[in-house]
Length: 81
Image (cartoon, rainbow, N blue to C red; front, side, top):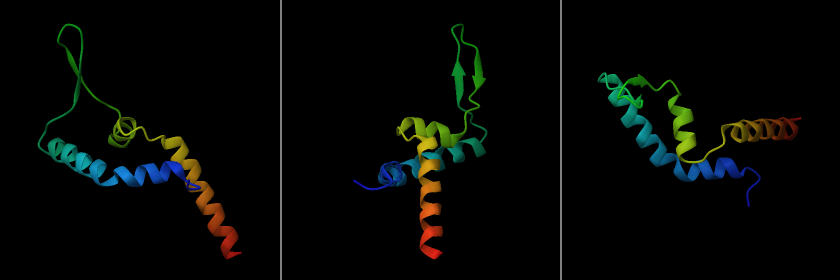
């Protein structure tokens, strides 16, 4: 097991996540927006960021990613001290 398991998990899905993200950005550039649909057919745009949507889909915890990044930075600082 790696010291940074959430980063390892993210690395395994990065190609697929990147492709999905690029597709959604392409669609957005064409004026196509993801929307929520209500009970009576009303729709409203999804305001959640693409990063958060992809993280949820792939079960990546962004708070853990941030904590691991801080650990990596601290480790590099100690190594360069």
